[in-house]
Image (cartoon, rainbow, N blue to C red; front, side):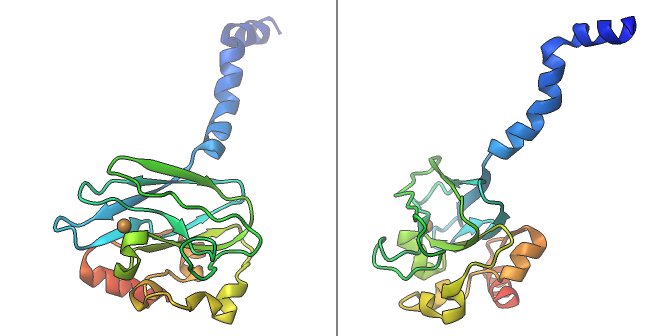
Length: 187
Ligand SMILES: [Cu+2]
């Protein structure tokens, strides 16, 4: 009893903090998605391009491409006249232009499937997909209404839902060959 008590006193509040903090920190820490570009500036992508998170989780987009500014912008009619590729009645996000080294954080509260793009590079296929929770809240995916006006190069890049749920995160390595392979394997 004495040993136990002394042990507890000795560790004090710090021990309690050590035991409980990791879970708290993990929940609050955002998932990172890196904005990347090839050396010649012609090839750009999000890494991971597909990500599975839970409601309440945050995502942080970081521009690690020294040669370009990028955005992470939700597919939503209120943003640059794009179709909705995210749950209805949900607030969309737009990072605006991130210079190299800058980042943007958004928290997802509603389950569903969310697609986003980079404003200057959508036509180059710089898009990504985030699945929040297990619910397949994707009326736009089933109806096909989300494809209207979206460049073919972008449509070919979205990873499949099963791949995202199965792997947690889906990456492309940035080479042209791998990019094409990923697009065909998961769409
Ligand atoms: Cu971009």
